[in-house]
Image (tube, rainbow, N blue to C red; front, top):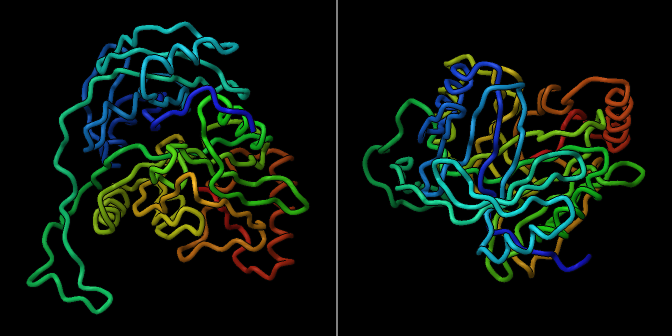
Length: 344
C-alpha cells in the first residue's frame, strides 16, 4: 500500500438526516445521546466525553449524509486539501467551530476532515462499580448505580460502510487517512465480506476498528450502522430495556462479537437507520498482525442471530442471490445459525 497522505486521530462526527426532526431527536435521546445545542438548520448531539458533538441531525431523507474525522494539526488539512476532488480549507461555521476540508469517497459519501474544534465540558458518565467475579470479592453491600433510563453514550466509536467493492473503498481511505487493516472476513469463493480498519497511531493502542468496509448484499452503498460506546454492561442493559419499553426496534443483540470482541446491541431509528451500543473493544496497534477468516467458519462468541433487516439493507435480485450464496456456505460448513452476519 502507498504511504498515507495524513493519519487521522479519531472519528469525529456523523451527519444524519431524518424526515421528522422531533421524532428523530426523541429516538436519539432515548438511545442515550444528549442535545448540546440547536441552530435553525440542525440539532447537535453529544456523548458524556468532552469531545465536540458527535451527531449532527438535520431535516431530509433518512440517511447518513457525511462522516468526519479529526486530524492532528492544520498541516494535515493543508495536505489533504491538495488531493484530487478536495475542497479548500474552510471555516466550519457551526457551534464547535474549527476548520474543515471536504471530499467525496468513490461511493459518493461526503467525508469531512476537521481540526481546531472547541471541546465541551464532560458530562456525568454512567455510574461505575466493581464486580464480584472470577472468585474476587471486592464489592461489599448492594450493587450501586444501576437505574432505569437511557444508556450513557460516551462517544462515537466506529461505523460500517457498505459497498460492492469494499477492498477498493478501503484502499481510498487508507491512502488518504491512514486507516489500516486489523482483520478480514472472506466470502465463499474469494473476495472480501468485511475488512475491519483501525486508526494508525503507531505504537498507541486504538479500537479494533474505526471503519468496517463491508460487502453489501444488494451491492448498494451506504453507512450500514453507526456505533456508540456506552459506560459498562449494566449501562448497556439498562439502555436495552429502556429502548424496549419505548417500543423501539431491536435489530440485533445483546451479544459479543468474535472480531473486535465488543458486547453489542443494535437498534433502528423509526426509518431503519441502525445505531449500535457497545462496550469492551479489542485494542490494536502497529504491531498487531491482522488475521483472515472464512465467512462460513465465523461464529460470534455468544448472542442471538441478527434480524433479516440487519443483514439485508435493501432487497433486490442481487441481495437474494448473494444471501443464498452465503446461506449455502454456512450450510456446507454445518452452521445451523446460517443468517448470521459478522457486521460490527
